[in-house]
Figure 1: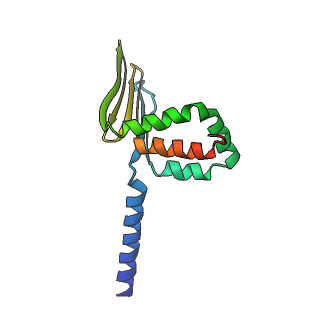
Figure 2 (figure 1 turned 135 degrees about the vertical axis):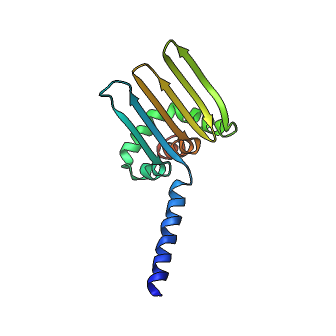
Length: 144
């Protein structure tokens, strides 16, 4: 009986951990080369990893990055704030021959799709993650 309770407790902790890790969504990066020996890279990362990772960056490196990003932080914050108001919107759609770039917001995620005859790149990032990055950089930037 004890082992059953312990196993149930462990399963509950694993389930709650999974829910917490994935509650902000997933960052997805797919890169496919159309060549016969081309690379196919598919990466899925829980969006929760980004703010946690930013807390692990050494202070001097984060301050340096924040100082370089300082002029853009207010714009980044406003863009993230406004994108939340439009959970489904097309931002950019450009076609030129076989090249195609499409940037949209769908279900609270920014989707970037770049297609060329030799390479396809697809990136999906939750808008909340952009806000988290802006918050962390602002807190690290002296004088902002």
